[in-house]
Length: 97
Image (cartoon, rainbow, N blue to C red; front, side, top):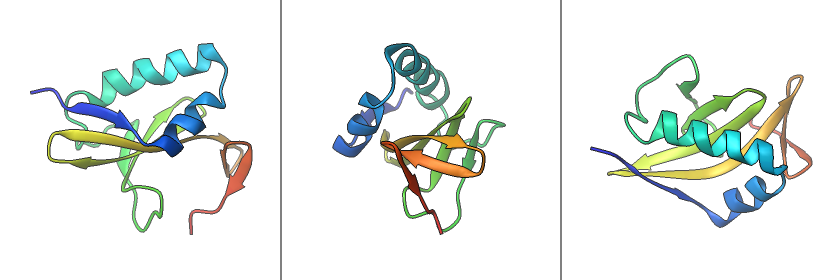
């Protein structure tokens, strides 16, 4: 059975920060990786310990999609990108510790 996918208002703001071609790539990967089996770890999906954003991360190239799963719904809570070892959300560096 397919999961529903929603974005929080914050994730929508994060998403709107990127150019259209990046947004298309991110959405395609979200559908491909999270519509079915969002709780199965792969090379692009992993659980995160003690992460204040969300318990799961999906890697889409340099982009990171942070999400949680409740019942049959995947909720994307943040979308950022990596610059070296830094996570950037809406143009600002974010500490995840």
